[in-house]
Amino acid sequence: METELVRMDREQADPQALERAGRIIRSGGLVVFPTETVYGLGGDALNPDSSRKIYAAKGRPSDNPLIVHIADMGDLPRIVKRIPQEAYLLAKRYWPGPLTMIFEKADSVPPQTTGGLDTVAVRMPSDPIARALIAASGGYIAAPSANRSGRPSPTLARYVVEDMDGRVDMIIDAGQALIGLESTIVDLTEGKPVILRPGYITEEMLREVLGSVEVDGAVNGADSSQPPRAPGMKYRHYAPKGRLFIVEGQADRAVPYINDYLARERAEGKKTGVIATDETAGRYRAGSIKSVGRRSDPEQIAREIFRILREFDDEGTEVICAEGFGESGLGAAIMNRLLRAAGHQVIRLS
Ligand code: AMP
Ligand code: MG
Image (tube, rainbow, N blue to C red; front, side, top):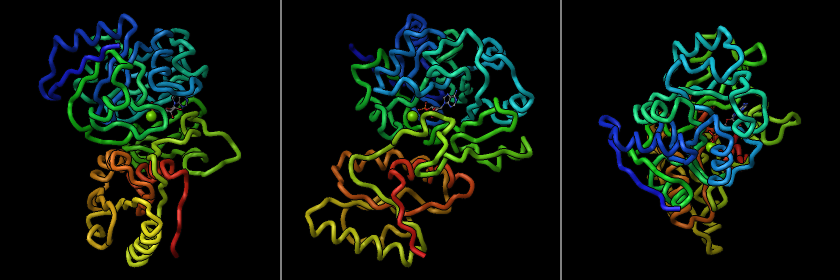
């Protein structure tokens, strides 16, 4: 299939191209579009064929449900059975924005969209292009991240093109995604709200609205006895092609450890890399050294982490060490993605 590539300015969307994109989705086609989190691979959420096409384009297991994107609170009742009080409170504070809520699904949502579950994940993005496209598409876009399954989520259109050219009808390029990590997912179907995936909306931010919130036990466990409640969390994800592991500990110990380890790998002819920070980047000796930004600026780290994982692939880096990023606030979401990219390989220096 021929993929049309459209460049669009976030501040000045192109109504004609959006109208065309909306028609593609309404007639069962696929459009990749920018959101504030990462690029999304969109199809009509209420059309089972569209969802099937999304799974095929991504190469994603079809038991891994899709998030339904809406642009208007008034469109929510058609796709969910019940809107709990917590949902109104969260929507008031964080919608539109990088928060996904799980509801009991209405019959209008086909099982192909929800991976056979009787619940549905819903988000209202804030990106103006995403919102205009949802409106032009009939109100309901099912959209996972626009990467091939298992690869890092795309924060730039050039990575979308790499993964999706020839597999979708249109790609809308609006530059770099501003947040860079996928949405926080909160399950509201079990009485007590539970975080299934950490994201830009942190546990603390949810607690401000909800009073209390739990974190699903499977979120950061390497292997847990109970399956994760977000089916996608069980898959290896974001993985670079090289071997990645995380070294946690004070810089004074972590930097020499990483230097020594990678020197041995280079001696065996391996191409090595480091995911460093501005504070430490100058202290690594050789190989491909990439800073994700200042440690004091987790928003920048969130924005850069997936891009950097992809750059190591482009360079053919074979062994990559990453520094750890703590677990508080946005750090929890960054570490969650990094741990999964590393297949939970962590070295903790005391
Ligand atoms: P992505 O679209 O790539 O950001 O992935 C969507 C994530 O949302 C996956 O981890 C899914 O497992 C999760 N998800 C979607 N729908 C549901 C649902 N009904 N219940 C639990 N998790 C869900
Ligand atoms: Mg994804």
